[in-house]
Image (tube, rainbow, N blue to C red; front, side, top):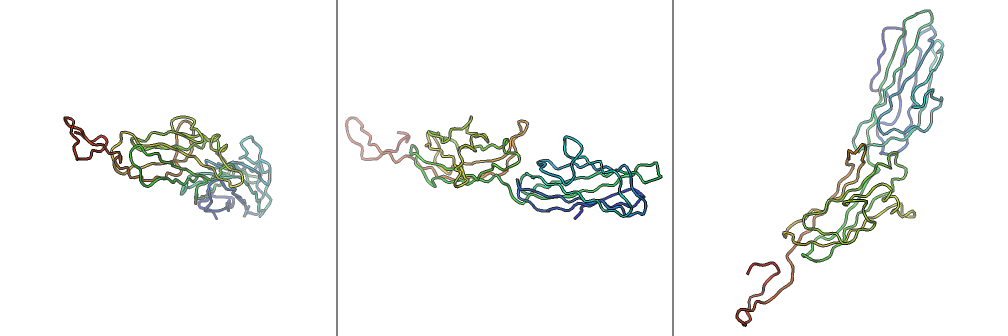
Amino acid sequence: YVLFSSSNTSPKVAVSIDGPTLLASGSEILYTISILNKDSTPLTDTSLLATFPEGFEFIYASEDPKNSKKNYWALGELTAFQNKVITVRGTLSGIKNESKDLELSFQYHQRGVSAEFGSSARFQTKMSSSVLTIQLSGPAQLTEGEEGTYTIAYDTFESYAQKDSVELRITPPEGFKAKDLVPKSDHDMIWSAQTLLKAIDPSKKTGTIVIRGSFRDATPGVKAFSATIGRKVNEAFTSEQTTSLDTTLTGSDFKARLLINGKNDPTPLTLNEPI
């Protein structure tokens, strides 16, 4: 399956790429590259340059690349009507619905012709899901001052190609004061990849973050507690999933009675209610 292929006038060369059009982020991907000499004249000094998509991590190729970037092959001669096939295996990571393009540039000469020719191809894979997923649970209702517990669960991402860049960020609602964080955040309600991986239960392949706290000096109403997991690369954070939970905050149920000039007023008072 090739999305795009081009070549100049002659000789006749077909460059094609086959691979998955949909892939879960962090999974292995296998590209099959075919270079067909459709001419009766051999091709000489042939070479192939691949531009892999961002998030691709090289694992293996059926022919060893000739450079440290693992994306250049000096293929020598292709005889008449020869079909050269190279397979490349790696992992590919990205955000859900993100498109990832592999681009190829094939350069060659035709025997007896001084001019250099070229042909190219492009193949696109779309991320069907993200390996970085979270679930958030917590109280549907709290009164001011009442302690509540929020739990963020996440699956292991140890095989994720860019695992070291993972971060989880919590955005608490206005007035929420955290009492306990398990495990503790690295800073300002942000957990690094290293901290998240340490908290994973190997038997369940999941990790949890538990946050206990209460609302103080907050206006009653619906409060949105949100959690975001994503990647931080070169100080730029890219979200892969955000989930939120609404907690309805009610006024304190603490009651008092007002004494006026030594007399007990029968009207009950609520905490923070103006007198």
